Structures are given as structure tokens and as C-alpha cells.
Length: 396
Ligand code: C5P
View 1 (cartoon, rainbow, N blue to C red):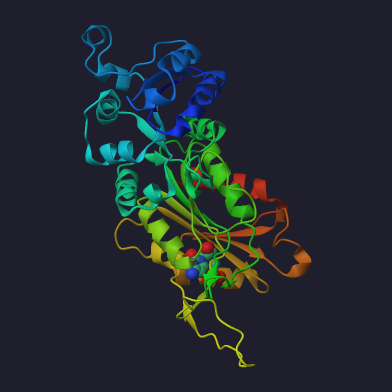
View 2 (view 1 turned 30 degrees about the vertical axis):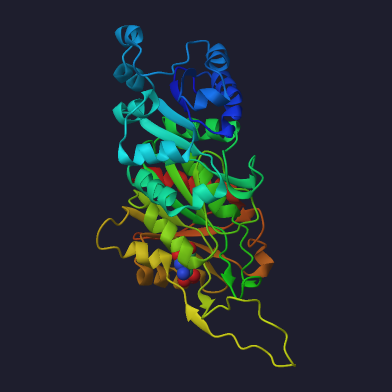
């Protein structure tokens, strides 16, 4: 719930602004007060009257309104909120934020605020993928700006891909997580989850059976305790949790890159089932079934993300947690793995098919720490996640 919280909602100029009346309505329904601010372009897509009426207070549009500067200055406006939400965050607004431009009310508020900022990017796929936007995104991430979406799908401009603004309900869930007063408030935690896909050629890949269920449950449980979670996920079968920053990747190399971009963090929980090997020189063109000769794939080792993060000389998270899926001598192998990788804890589980754990809804884990091995009773993956999140909160 957002009772007693104030959201400063900055609406940029994109077609996704049509979702902002619903966003204001959901924020109000969750108990928050909303101060709408529209850029000049934003006001072309949704009227200040609509947002002001739904918010129950005036929507602001211009910087140089001297009467308003006397009543409520832009500095006060930017600081009276508990959270600043930018939705839709256009390529232009992101660029202004990344460079510190302040040439209208919205960008000035974003530069003047001392509060956390959540942006929901929305733009054409090409604009999103342009190196300039990706550079700005990386800068904003480093500046501590929280990002939600964009989601992939059909776009108003007729193209398909990442660029759709997150749904209002997703944005509200994320705002709730960011404003929650749980024991992990103010802590940034990276969670990896799901399998990786390693290409053989443009249409074929090597994968594994990880569903992403345990990593998803952990991300959810950490966010529920107030953590700011960056959820780096391979192509999982379960949907990503709400209330976290989702970064979708395919390969181990991309996963490592996404984790490195997400650093620094207070903790990292590596629940992904990362492929150990990838195909060396994956073919750029689809391999053909020629004259009865069988292809030979040669493999090369993938980077070990857990070991890389655990052994960082600078900027290592205070707590690094790895997973170990074993079929025999679980505790002995997992204890050895903890030493080899250099992580602080290992969550070990027995994945023999008869346990029904891999792909199932329950898990029986052993937590291996510096103090030794601790067997947890068999329980639902959500319960394992909640117990682990509570332990992480106690350790940070
Ligand atoms: O070595 P193994 O794959 O058994 O280790 C499992 C742990 O290491 C998991 O926490 C997994 O997420 C992590 N891992 C990784 N990068 C790899 C391989 C495994 O982060 N390339």
C-alpha cells in the first residue's frame, strides 16, 4: 500500500501517455497522492485537465509561471514527493536526465529532486536500441535511477519489440516495492535466474530445463522486504516478478554483462542455471543439412558469473550467494564449490529426478555458510525464498 505517500508523476511526450490516467487512478486507489507534471509534448497526448481531475490536484506544465513559483517553487515540488515516477520516459527525457539538462519544468524537477526516481521507458524499438539511448540508460542506472520495462510487444508505431511502456499495475507494484519500509529498504540486490540459451546458429540453440521458478520467488521475496532488486533473467518459463527491475538476456555472456552493469550492489543471489559451455564460432547463417555429413560442434567455456562477482577485487557485493544443484554427495560437493567460487553462501539442492525438485514447486535445500551446513526441511519454493530473504536481511 502507498498510504501517506506522494508520487510526483512526470508524463513525457509519447503515445504511451494514454496509459497515465489509469496509472494515476491506480496510484490513488493504492492510497498515494499524485502530483502530475506534463512536458509540453506530454500535454499533446493527454490533457492536464484529465490527469489533474483524476489526481484531485492541479497538473503542472510550465516552468516559468511566476505566480506558481511564488505559491510552490520547482524545488519544493521536486522534494515534497516520496518518489518521482517518469512515465512514459521518452528517449528525449532519458537523454536530458543523463546529461543533466534542465530546460523545462519536468527536466528541472528531475535535476532538483533529492528523492528516488523510477522511469518507465517507452519508445520505438529502434530508438530504444540506438547506442545513444543504451548509453543514456547505462548512465541513469549508474546514477541510481530505477528502471521498469520497456516490455516487448506490438507497438503503436506498427513495429514489434522492446519499447512498450510497462503496464500501470506493474509500475504501481514497483513503486510500492521501492517505498516499502521492510528490513532491506535501501539495499540493492542482483538476482540471476532462469536458463541461458547458447546459439548454434540463428535458429538453433543449446538450453537447459531451468524454469526460473526459484530465482523468481527469491526476487519477489527480497522486493517484499523492501530491497531494490535487479532481476537478470534468461529465457525462463515462469513470468518475471513485479516490483523489480527486469533485465532479459539470452546467453551467459549477456548475463555477465547485465550483472556487471547492475553493479554495485549490496548482495548478489545467483540462481540462474548458466550453461557451462557455448558453441565456439556459432554459425551466422542457418546450418544446412548437406549430403549426409553431420556437423561437429566444438565448445568453449562460458564465463563463470558467480566466480567473477565473488572474486571482484573492487566493488564486490557484501554478500554473494550461489546455488549448487547436485545429484550425489550434495553437502560435500556444495561445500567444495563454495570454496572454489569464493562466494559466501551456497544454497544446495538434490536434483535427482526422484526428488521432483527440478521443475517442481517444492525444494529441499541445505544452506552452506562459513559456519557449516544447515538442512532446511522440504517446503514450497516460495517459502524457501522467504526464508532465504530473511537470512539475507539479517546478514546485510
Ligand atoms: O558450477 P555450477 O554451475 O554447479 O555452479 C552453480 C552456481 O554457479 C549457480 O549459483 C550458478 O548461477 C552459478 N554459475 C554462474 N555462471 C556460470 C555457471 C554457474 O554464475 N557460468
